[in-house]
Length: 375
Ligand SMILES: Cc1ncc(COP(=O)(O)O)c(C=O)c1O
Image (cartoon, rainbow, N blue to C red):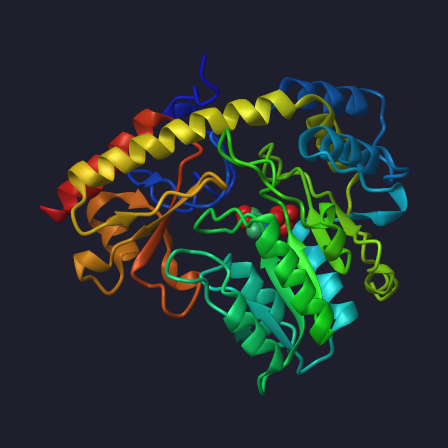
C-alpha cells in the first residue's frame, strides 16, 4: 500500500496550484502540495460539518487541544491552552506577529536560502531583511547571528524556519537553545515557523522550540496545512513561550480573523486522527529521498543533493552544470517544473527545489527527463 497511488491523469484533474501553473506536458515537482488523497477522517469531519450546516464562525479550543495532545504524544511536551491562539494560515500569523512587534524600517533576520514568502512578509511591509545565511553544510550560523544582532542593522525580530525549507535541516535542541538565548540577550523577538514539524524522516527527532526551558521567549506559528496537505483550509495556531506574553498582547486587531470554521474542523481532525498517517507519509518520502540520491548520482553529474531529514523537499545544487538558471533550463528542455533557487535567496539561482511528496515513478520520470536534457 502506498499513499502516493494517484495516477498522473488523476492528479492533472486537480484545480490547485501545483498541477496547473506549468503547461500540461511539464511534470510539476515544485510547490509544497502533496500528491496524496485527503486523510479519510478529514473527509468525514468536513462532510459531517457540511451536512449539519455547521458553517458559521470558529469557536473554542478544539484545535488547540488537538495540537497540545499531539505535542505531548509526539514530542513529550504539552503547552497550556493559554499559550495558544487561533490564527489563519501560517504566513498571515507571521505577518501579524511582525506587524505587531516590529516597526516600519526595522530589520528582521532571515536565514537564506529560505521560503520565498519570508522575504515578502518582511520587505513587502516596509521592514528590511538582515541576511544570516545558513552555513555550507546547511546549518544555523550562531556566530554570524550574534554578529548580526550586534551589527549596524540590529534586528528587532528573527524569523526562523524549523525544519528549514528548502533544504530540510532539522535544528537541534542545542542550536535552538543557543538561538533563543541570543535573542533574549539582544532583545530580538524569536518567531519560529514550525509548519513542517511533523514532516521528519523516521528515526529523526524534531525539537519544538517551546519544549526547551530556555527558549520561552519564542513565538511559534503552526498549522496542520503542510503535514496533512490541507492548504485549501486556512487555519493555524500561534503558540507563545511562557515568557512571550507581550508578543501576543502586541498582536494587531483581526490577527485571527481569517481562521475558517471548516478549516479548523479539517485541521483538528488531521491532528486527532492523522498521526500514523503522517508518519507513513514520511516513510515513503524517506524512500523517495534514497531514490533521488541514487538517481542524482547515476544520472545527473554536476548536480549535488545534500539529503536532510526534514520536509519532503529536496534542495539540489546545480552549480556543476554551469547554468545561470537551471530551473528555466529544466522547464524548457526537460519539461520538469521545479522551484528556482533564486526565489529563496539572492545567491541561490543555481539551485532548484524538488518536491518529493509524490510517487517514485514520477520522481524517476522527472530525473530521467532532466538527464536527457543535459545530454
Ligand atoms: C515554511 C513555510 N511556512 C508557511 C507556508 C505556508 O503556510 P500557509 O499556507 O499556512 O500560510 C509554507 C508552505 O509551503 C512553508 O513552507
